[in-house]
Image (tube, rainbow, N blue to C red; front, top):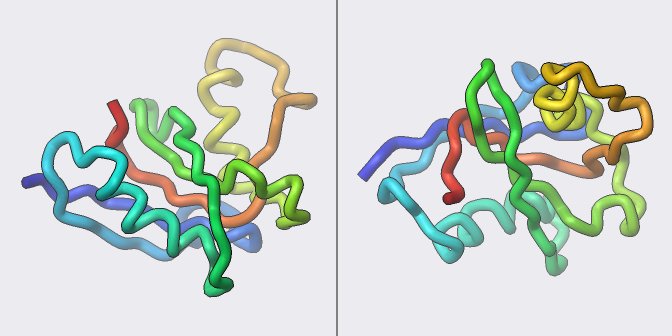
Length: 118
């Protein structure tokens, strides 16, 4: 078993550090069902609804990490999550890419401080 730290980043957060910290004890490769059990309710934001969560590979503190977001957040009219979008764009910016027209993250995001999805 391994302890995985994560941060719940709400759209109102100015940075990831403003999020709510958490941790979960999982096997080294937790798999879809374990991740879904934790992530899906957190992305619902207290509103019982189906969430199609998506894994986004990101750079966090210069290392590969996992972020989970609502795949339909934009279509559902959820607010832009600027802090999560900044993390999402970090790898592209590190390569010198222009991210001004890149997709954004909408709604709550769950940022694991390391990669949990293989």
